[in-house]
Image (cartoon, rainbow, N blue to C red; front, side, top):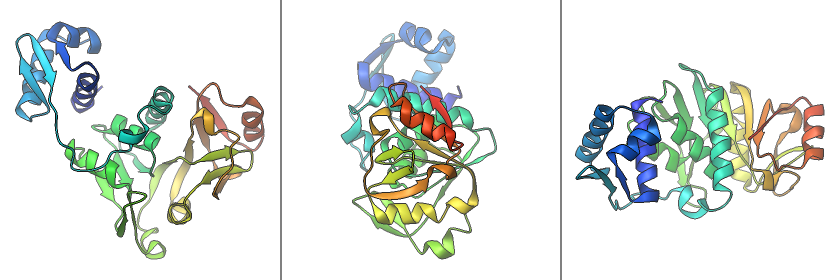
Length: 251
């Protein structure tokens, strides 16, 4: 875990617990007392926490943008976190990673923050998060901002050929043996333009969406290289997807 990743994790833990002692940080992150105090000092100086005697406490920071976790934090959050962690493990230093919209994709971006990877996205909340947390390599696909989906959409026929990635991570409203479904046609069409320019396509779908149809068929099963989902996913659907060449990662 890099320093930037650890700092992000400390802030997230403080948001849950509101207060942590130095000893608690040492135990939670397996770090030395000197590292724990240094982390507290740095985060205190940047205003991300408040340094107190023998520890730190959370600060209430007004958000300047919407986060997908505001509305979806309680919906399969633990499973989505495991999916995001498994997805991050696929990425190697120096690679380019395309991340599309969705709460699980946002969690993936959080786990990649601070790693030596270039993140390519048109998802405004994720781009804002990475910039605020000083991720060094962020490439934002431009265009008109669509508030309902929190994405940027532009002349994709011209722009899609510019952006290439080793991986594309995307999610949807449902996944069957036919493929991955998205609810919004504009979002699906914009992302489809990128498919020809990425090495591997990975679907991040929590188990409640396995077997569900709805909206637009974004990608046929044969186009997907990996599917990362929860262990409670319908095994019959997963077997059908494996038969079509998809590698399934259960978390």
